[in-house]
Length: 111
Image (cartoon, rainbow, N blue to C red; front, side, top):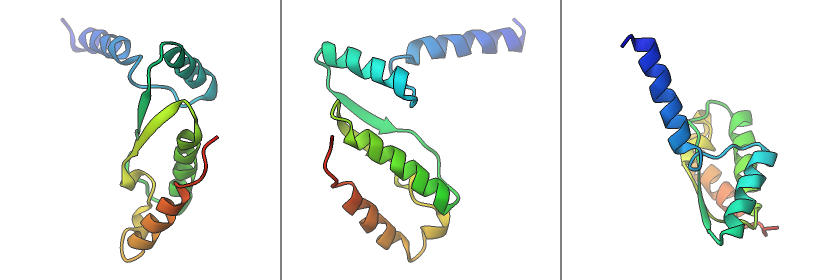
């Protein structure tokens, strides 16, 4: 087989196999998935995917999205890679302060 058809077949198979593992962030499809799991009495542990961020504004935006997920009552546990919510410019001496600030924010009430 030529490379392009094989790549397309593999990509389709990966999408089909991961459709219930990799959830959309958009509200409507995420809500539909969460409601379905709740009806089946399935608890969810969410691993928020994300690569290392470059700037403060991107870090702040991603952190706010993580907080939105944490506040959802349907989600029991959230795992976040630190480099996806702390900018590279903050990773020197300011990293400890940034981590502490974000840790305080995660103790916000849910709901």
